[in-house]
Length: 107
Image (cartoon, rainbow, N blue to C red; front, side):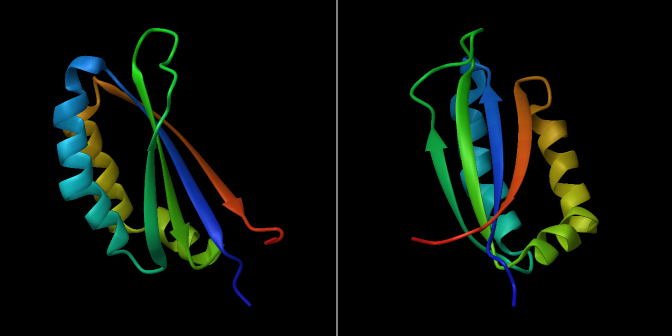
């Protein structure tokens, strides 16, 4: 039985790049991620608080069918490509942190 998995990505964006980053993120990046095996959905949130230096913080919750799908994704050519494209387009105006969670119980 597979365990539902949540891949959480926190992205801090320099305010001057926010509009350009959002357009690319929503029209290009997220759809490419969701085409990967095991990815089911993505919910994107905007933090009501900024980072201490004023950068805007977003949180993306990618739902996956299983942690195995996530593990396969991390070593895939697609993952390498997606990270490289993010770095190429927005590396100097974004900061990322990531976390992978597996479901313990649903209430």
